[in-house]
Length: 353
Image (cartoon, one colour):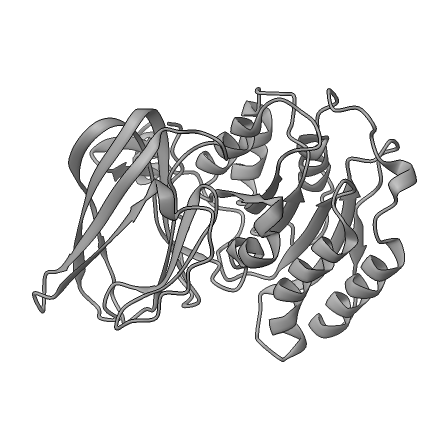
């Protein structure tokens, strides 16, 4: 019995004062993996290819990536389609084959679901991806472009599978939707898998499509879900960097595109080594427009529910203290994420709130 007790003890981790059990991971964040590009047939093809160019472009120009195999799938069709894995001997040609397949397949208006009450089959598509048992599936990223909301709200089974294989989602939803009932399901899925979900208005799609979370800053350094309401302030968990790391910050400020809960927030940081500090403020009126803010600290993009900033924090190995001031007219969930191109050797714990 003693060896068993010792083994179990070795698997225990303390996170923010809570005891959690950590089981052996099936892969590390730097292992070879798959990049799935999944898009709704309700979108226009130019909208699909514009974003694919952002995903594929860095690979075309020679950026190194652990996503050595590309996969593609079109969903929200009257007949469900299979995921295509574009296996090849080289990273470049796998992604090139995916691009050629995308150009051949396009979108097909004749296969569109002409019923606004029908929900998206995106959850089934993701479950099929997880259940594919393809080589190097663990640690993969799925870029998901949506136009139709799900009808389901129950996602516990899918969340468990995504967590087990550490699948990373990049969800971009065009508004207004072509059907479905529950955009908050997508937000909940993002919250439970350490990512965030971006809603973009059709009228500003060309400006805001860049807000799809980058697959080339894949390494998660910080992930926090917060339930807030009213006016308040809180001290957030600090972040400690052991080396100089350029940090990318993404914040989802409300759980649906048309929520009126978010009024404003300010997030501030303090460098405990140098004493330097910084902060930024965003209001409700500043969402849903494109912002490239070029100053000494930040370059920024926003959508209907997200704020994204490059070069957040000093690029210095130290501990940063964080605080949040907020104003919400009703209860909502904030998702705060920090990612980088700099590899990290461990996964972050998940949150159920």
